[in-house]
Image 1 (cartoon, rainbow, N blue to C red):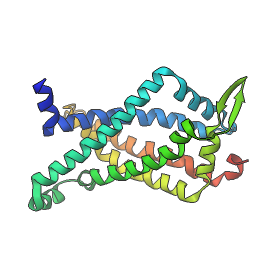
Image 2 (cartoon, one colour; image 1 turned 135 degrees about the vertical axis):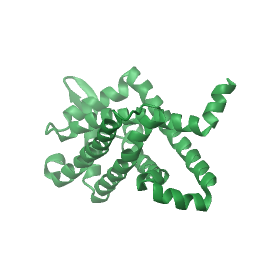
Image 3 (cartoon, rainbow, N blue to C red; image 1 turned 90 degrees about the vertical axis):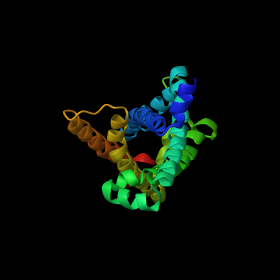
Length: 230
């Protein structure tokens, strides 16, 4: 197992782990977005509550969720290690060079990731924690009682500060994805002159479309409180 330990402690190994965990989290964002878009249906939260119930009760989904939480922590920990290692390696002179030779998003991935992490803590406290341990009202659908998480979300997005925080955080997520998407493929060696333009296009489209769709949800719900907070 020495080769495995050496790989994980090397710069290349850390970058590989960052790339793999990053791609997994990108897939998670797609699934999470599909679920959150259910909030836009004018059905008093029926579709979203059924989705939330399924995601928190299905044994397979629960296992994947725990894996996802672990990957988030690993992604953050390795990001901190890489940022620290890069700063020590380049020093003040090296930073001056890299400042002119790399994109702003590339140089500030650590800062962007840290802000996203702070948002995640607030977000999980407001929704995930409440879902599992909060005193949430229940609703019956065809004889099945489920937690009405829709009311919690609607109440949160009715607050300007929270809706604004969410939108700003999605903007930062977009910057993070702008560099991270293509960088993950490059780190894994999945780059070729013929396909790199396609990867860059898909990555940049993803970095724009996904955060925008996430941000539109709290904006729409905040502007239409008469519908969502009846």
